Structure formats: C-alpha cells, structure tokens
Image (cartoon, rainbow, N blue to C red; front, side, top):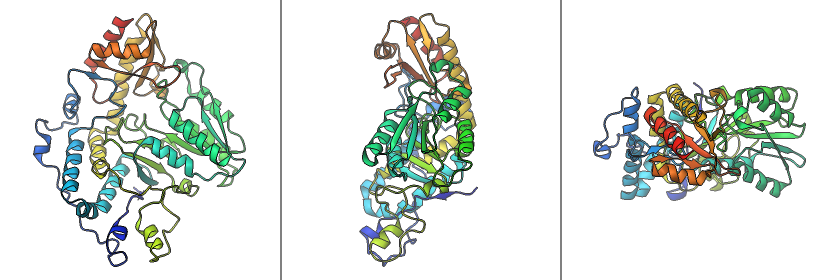
Length: 441
C-alpha cells in the first residue's frame, strides 16, 4: 500500500551541533512494550469479546458512559504507553526526545496507514480544531473565491472560515442540507449541497457526522457529485472537498478512499479513544499543492535551509506545525491505532451501529420523546440525539447522571439531549439508558 508519511522531523539541527550530525543518524528508539506493572489489574485483551474490550478502560464501572466520545478515556495499552514515555522524558528529556522522535513519528504513520487504508500525506496536530484552523487558514484562495459550508457545521469550522474571510475578504456561504434531521435523506442532502456550488467555489467544507443532530453525511455521494462539477475545471479552480471527520473517525468503517474526499481532519481523543491532545490532517498529494503553511515546521530540510545548509524541502514547506508537543501523548497514538486494528475497523463500526440502532428503536417508542437522529444507519452513526417534552437538555443530562447514565447536551442552538454508543457501552447499558429516559418522560 502506497503511503507518504510526512511527520519525520528532528530538533538536532536546532538543539545539537547543527550541520555536523547526519540528519538520519538518530539512535534507534527503545521499542520495548510498557512493563506489565503499567497494566496492573487489567486482564489480557480478547478482541472478539466486547466485555473484554470494556475491561481495558479505567472508566467508572458504575456509570454507563454515553458521553465517552466527547473526551476519551484511553485503553490500557495507550495509558501504559503514555506513562512509559512520560517516565523516560522526565528522567532524561532531551536524550529520549532525540533518540525517539523520528522513529516514533514513523511508527504512528505506519499504524495510521493501516487504519486509514489510503494513499496520501498525513500530518499530526493536537486536535480537530487545530487541524481545521490550519487547513482553512492555509488553503490558497484568491480575491473573488468562495467557500461553501453548511448551517449544520460546528463552531470550529464556522469560526475558522469567518476568520479567513475577515483576513482575506473571501466569501463564505452556508446552505441548509435538511429541514428535519430525523427525515434527512441522501438525495436531499447531496442535492442541497451541490446546488450551492458556484463557478467561484474553491472549498466545500462539511462535517461527516453532525454533532448537533447525529446526521451522517453521504460523503461518497457528495464527492461523486462534486467530481462532476469539477470535471471541466482547471486544477486551481477545482472545489476541494474538506471533511471534519471527528465523529466518524473511529466509529464508521470508511477511510479517505471510501469517502473520496480531498482532506480529512480529525482528533485522536474521541471515537478512536486515543491520547488526549492528538489529531491529524490527511490530504491527497494534489490537494496539498494548494496549501501554504501558516506555522513553521520542524523538519530537517526547512531548518537546514534556514541555517544555510541546503535548498529547503522538495515540493515546498511541509504543513506540519513545529514546536514542542506533548510527546508522551502523541507517541501513544501508535497504540491507539494498533488497538483499533486488533478489534477491526469493520467490527467496531458494526458494534457502534448495532447499539445505536437499539438505542434509537427504544427511544422512538417512548411517549414524549422526539428522536432527532435518523433511524436509518445509512445517514447516522454512533450519535443519538433526542428531545424530552418539558425537560431541557441540561436538566435531562443531570437527571440521567443521577441514574448512572452519563450523557451530554449538544453545544448548539437549539440544543438536544445526546447519547453516544461506542465500544465502551453494552447492550445492557443501552436498555438502562432507554429505561432512564422513559422515567424522565
């Protein structure tokens, strides 16, 4: 499988004897797995047993965690990796950093390649919001160009685009894809979005799964329709399909190849259950040609050129933001991808959908409850939103918590009660959640 991992960077040019050390001659990293003592009390993982999967998490067993996707608690292997890296960094920071940075980043891209299953270039960030800000701040736009987004996108997309418009004077337009989220359909959404594309549209910014309603966009169908629009456009005039994928990434069995997008942005600390403070931006090689970095990278070629040792990186400055990061968390992304690979992306998606279907079916039968998320798994994923007559979402969240059900309220106007089914929830907990909502209604 072809894969270009663009995360190989080094600080030896900055922090060591610049120009005298061979750029690729870093010491091999200590690849020993975390010691068994880092996982005291955690039984071995049986990937085929969902109860065994649940035991890998340190989540309070007395609570049904339907909010786990918001800010994930990672599994034991990820926690152990974080602890191991933190211990080594605390003991001898610079030595451990220099001996591991290049190799660890390469390991992350290898695991990401297995998970994403797509040819392209991937860069690491600290969150989805950082990735969206970098992407929409760096894509090349000329006066008169337009960006098309939707009324349903989250603050991070809307605000990143507003800031870009304020800076450069580009036009940002929004379209509504559906009137009733519970009845949203593929043809309706694709038609509404494509109808909003004009000859001046250069970026189409959408979200894979709407955290406001639980609606999942038909990204593949959108990509196909947009491809027809782009058919006779020059490379610079093509409308790039950019996807905030955070609520599909780790929950839906699809990668960039299946989606057909030009860019995919996600965080690692939601449905992937990876380390906190991690994320990525994936893009096709052609799409990256229309990007100009806005934060200096820390790659060897760029720093070497600054020091006068070379011409700079071939193909332009890499988009990856430089600086020091929380490396104990970033490097543990490898174990997060490996964990999901062991479970199987298809099995995780099927489990998520099975539990979501069970939850939606149960909620739909309760008098006084209006289901907001579509029943069809074709246009939904793991997020399930609803309204309880006479009960505000925040009040419902509080009341459910008193019954041992952890839920959330959508940070939108209007706001809904939101529950997320995932690999840390069970069939029995779904039944408990339905019973608790019934009691509130």
